[in-house]
Amino acid sequence: VYTCTLMSDSFAFTKAVVCGIPQSLPKEAQRQSPSSCPVDLRKAREQHGQYLDALRGLVQELHELPVNEEYPDCVFVEDTVVVCGKKALVTIPGHPSRRGETPPMKKLLEGLGLEVQSMTEPATMDGGDVLFTGRELFVGISSRTNQEGACQLASAFPSYKVTSVPVEGGLHLKSFMSMAGASTIAVGQSRAASAAVRCIQDQGQFSYQFVQVPDDIAANCLFINGTLVLACGEKFAKSKEMFEKQLCGTPKIYLDASELNKVDGALTCCSVLIN
Image 1 (cartoon, one colour):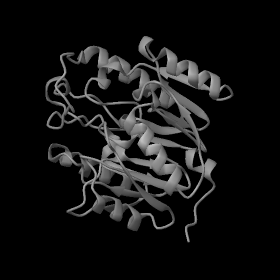
Image 2 (image 1 turned 135 degrees about the vertical axis):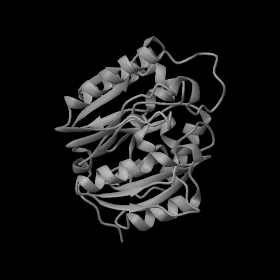
Image 3 (image 1 turned 180 degrees about the vertical axis):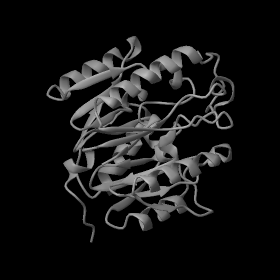
Image 4 (image 1 turned 45 degrees about the vertical axis):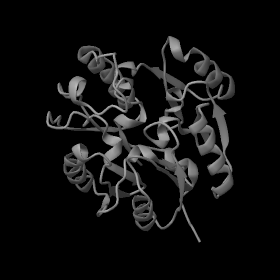
């Protein structure tokens, strides 16, 4: 038997944890595939600054971890922890180069009064593979997250059903889907996205409305205190049209994260949200 708080309460956030962009990111950050498009550091930091400004307007407290040049991916704080309510599970990131990012996150969350647990080997997990709907958890089994990670997540959050979802393409589960409302999931149109939707529909405990958009990366969005934070840009015009049409009553903020997109980053990657 699973019990949980009201689903709408799960998206009422008071705090966000973030980290700046290290100078080492453009050349040393992990990429799924080699890219001919170099990251413009100045532009990336400008875009990230706009992201932080948006968060400041949506939550009461913004906590910033120090930038560490030894960890080029440290801006992607989402991967280091999973937070549900007042409990946090510090992960073991799937790529060994990122595992030194977790101690500062653990220390900060303990300082904020959260009940913090840590994964143990052989589990691996990137937070980008965890979709919390407010009533249950879906975990992408990917190149970064294994089944033992999903099992330890279930042990850490026994109030919620945990369902494993094979990630058949893309880096993470949230590379092509995320929460766009209290019972709404935004999802891309790739084969991997469609397979994940079928899994959620077949094995999930609850039913959801799906907003399908043409661009997988545009399906990565943040739903914070009733406002939807979305990717903007010319190439996402059709996705924007779909969001405007299907979620017309939801306030929206559009942000450009095109530089971090080049190293597989997206909007959810850059913050950890706390109720």
